[in-house]
Amino acid sequence: MTDIEKYILRIADTTLILSQRLSEWCSKGPSLEEDIALSNISLDLLGQANGLLEYVSKLNGEISPDEYAFKRDEREFYNFQISEIENGHFGDTMMRQFLIDIYFKLYYQELEKSKDETLSALATKSLKEVSYHLRHSSNWVIRLGDGTQESKDKIQKSLNNIWKYTGEFFEMDELDKQMVKEKIGVNNKNLKKDWDKLVDETLIKAKLKRPEDGYMMTGSKKGIHTEMLGKILSEMQYLPRAYPDAKW
Image 1 (cartoon, rainbow, N blue to C red):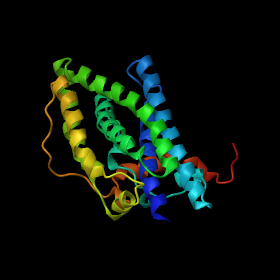
Image 2 (tube, rainbow, N blue to C red):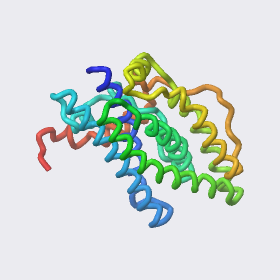
Image 3 (cartoon, rainbow, N blue to C red):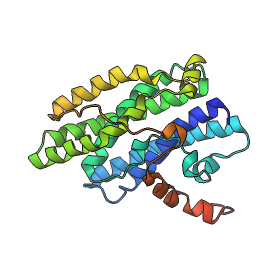
C-alpha cells in the first residue's frame, strides 16, 4: 500500500465507521425530525467515505471500494477511535458529533488546498455537508447544556467521557508529515488552536465546563482500536463475508 493510499484510508475509515454508528439511530430518534436528520447525516458520511474509497481503489487498481469496506480486518482500519464509541443516549451522540464535526470542518478547509486535485474536490464537496452537520450538533449541545438541570448534567457527563478521544485529532506521525511535505495532506497540529476556539465558544453558550486535557486515547494510526470496533465490523461486514459472491 502506498503512502497516499493509506493516508486516504484514514479519512475514509473515520467517516465510514461514524456513518455506521449514526445509522443505528434510524427509527430510534427522539423525534421524527431528528430521526430523519441523523439518518441524512449518516448518509452524507457514507457518501464521503464512498468517494474516498473509490479514489483509493482507483489508485490501487486491484481492490474494489467494497473490498476495502467489507473485507479488511479490525487492525487494517485507521479510523479515529471516537468514531467507533457507542451512541449512548442522544446527548452522548450529539457531543461526539459536535467534537468531530469541528475537526472535520477545519480539516476539509485545509484539504481543499491539497495539490491532489481529487482530494481537493472531495474536500470541497464534504465541507458543504460538514458545515451543516456542525450547525446541527452545536445547536443541540447549546440546547441541552442550557436546558433543564437534567439535560445539562447529562451532556456535561457526555463531554467529560468523550473528551479523552479528541487527542487523536491532532496527532502527526511520519506518514502525515510526508503528506504535508508533498503538499497533499494536512498538518493536524495546526488545527488545534482553531478547534479549541470553536469548542470553547459553543461550550460557553451551552454553559458547560471544558474538561482538563489529561490522558488521551491513541493508536488508530497503527490500527489499534477499542473493542467496540470489532462489534461494529462484525455487524457491518456479516453479509458480504457470508455471501462473498452475492450480486445486488
